Length: 373
Image (cartoon, rainbow, N blue to C red; front, side, top):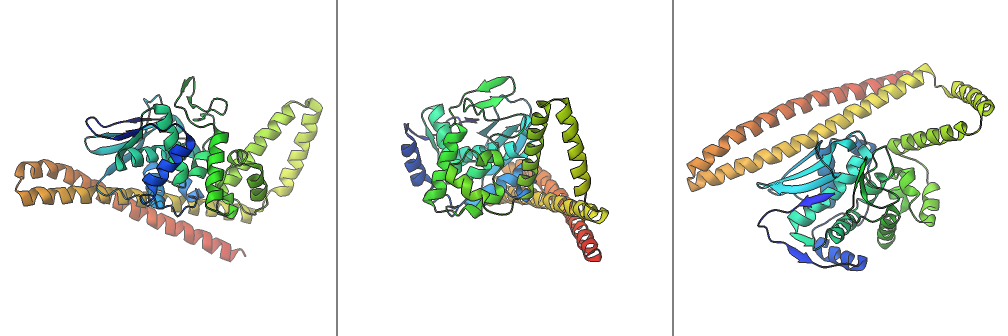
């Protein structure tokens, strides 16, 4: 992860090397600025289905961070060495995430949470530490303080392109590694566990949303208590099933041909026994379609809100120029305002279409379940 600092901008720069020093500084910095309620952000199925800008909006809203007049652009980018970076250019704030994470929503959300804390610390508070390693560790601790510990942990150990190396605790890309002094996953998990204990957060708040690989990093007593609780989000359940299938496959490969035949026969029988009826399959299919339509609509609404915010800022600036009689600046901004208005109107039309699709999908699911009870 990296951050580019604005040229000519003054920052409060300090030297803090110890974890407790960093945490105490976050208490001072975030005491009135972050309003997470000292709880944990819960990464639901709907959250993980959102596009990047809407993910960012959801996390900033949870933390009580208002963009005010800032314009924040969040996107994937191909030509990057790091997993993600934050920078400011010409008054616009950018968060860009390596395209290699685009097919892994767990990794994308984890990287995004870290970059958002760069935005809050660097832009919102003009604050940084004087070494890259300490600054990155402070930023990682900030993700915990803001309540995003589960989001980051869920992205540690999943998928082929691991953005975090379990062995080295360093930022990692396929065929190359960039060391930024991150906490090792186990160390980060200990910080999250301390946050949970300090704020007396009940395990049931996050139990349904923590991935099995992330839970394995937590202290023994938390793992024990969480596993006793019922219910899992669909995302967690699917990842758990995938892990079990991979684990079973690895075991089967090592036990010989005879065992493979026996196990294969057993799997065929149990699969046939567990195949749901046609009605059940159709119900699941319709429910999945309804959930996807809902997630698409929520994502569109998030993008629409961002477009509206951008257009409002431009309109307000044009009013300032108009009041001041600055015709040149007003005219220069009018073209941009027209493009932003078109983008907002197009997004609004798309959201209207997705809203209808969501309503239709939901109605189809409801009608089918009622008719086949």
